[in-house]
Amino acid sequence: MSEWLESAITRAQGINDWLAPKRAYALELLSTTKWPTRKTEAWRYTPLRAVERTQAKVIDAVVNLSPVAIADFAAIELVFVNGKLDESQLAKALPKGLSVTLGRDLEKAQQAHALKTFSTVKPERHLFGLINDALAQDVVVVTVADGVDVAEPLRISSLLSQGAESHTRVQVTLGAGSRLAVIEDIQAQGETLSTAFVEYHVESNARLEHYRFALQTGTNVSIGGSHFNLHDRAKMHSTIVGFGSDLSRLDTDIIHAGEFADAKLNAMYLLDGKELFDLHATVEHAMPNGTTEENVRCIAADRSRAVFNGRIHIHRDAQKTLAELNNRNLLMSNTAEINTKPELEIYADDVRCAHGATVAQIDKQALYYLQTRGVSRSKAQVMLNFGFINELIDLMPNAALAEWVRPIIRERFSQMEVK
Image (cartoon, rainbow, N blue to C red; front, side):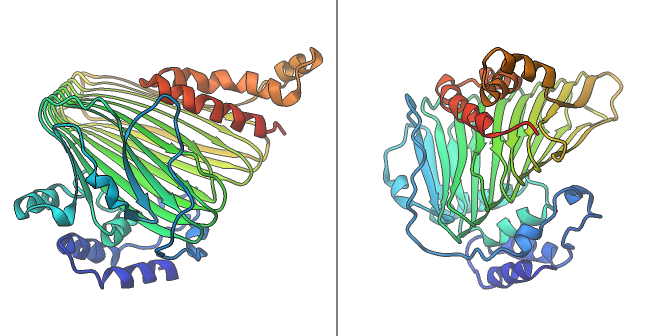
């Protein structure tokens, strides 16, 4: 067990609030959970040295940051500052049918319901999920009433100042037939450590449009997850865009808990320097007639390291399932490293499933060809690489977000060099 984990457990033991039963259960599991090593399969390619040496602490400082402005884009803002919710956001008027409440402010019956659903989608044994269970200051509970179509997206932003440790938690429930778009993003200054987990319960015929932007770089440690529970005919479309840092680890879990549920997941991450990004995506098809389409693309330059573990599990009762997983990777240097592990585990006999993974290098002949025609090396790289990612950007349902992130990615490409 690391010193940091010992400290986290000690701090959690002193918290006594409405989440006490969940905190106690998390601490019980943590007491029997070993600190991951290279022999731990889920962390095999993701060393935790950055966590072990962190000096980040829980602080109550003013953050000289604000959520990045997005042109032609309006959203309902939910902002965490160093792990603490800016409650002034809760005082603003919300669209009819949408409620955003801190768990401690819920009525007893509502708290009981929130406790019942808390941590039921996130994997129970995720080490940092348990730490988040034990240390999150509170849970922000977001509920969309049945049949309500919320026009403006909900944006959940986490801002961290130098040296800050943060643990945020949000629980989102979309009532039957409702519709909501959610954007998760994080901005960090210097050395920070954060865990951020969001659980989504998408009821029958509801529609969720989801984005997670992890665009911070540098010496921060960012570990978190987005977890989805889909009921009958629920639909979700998720887009993940990530850059690397000392350590970025993101877990995505999708559970098809109802029939005819439909999930689309598109993820792209771009790494440079000594950055590390680890994406673990798990899809559980527990009911019949579900569909999953998953596309993950990565570009790794310099001495960066990318990890992808994609698992689709078709249960015995999940007949008529359609599931596809495609993972494509591009190496821009001989010293970058990509570890990919797509998995299909099928127990039903009437399904159509496919998976595949490729790792390739940039076409140096094409790069040379463009340079001989007067195109600068950096511009040629952007031209050759951008199409690899741009296809997934074009699939983003929100055009304003696509137009916002496109030049950010183009700028990232221009900084990455072929070696």
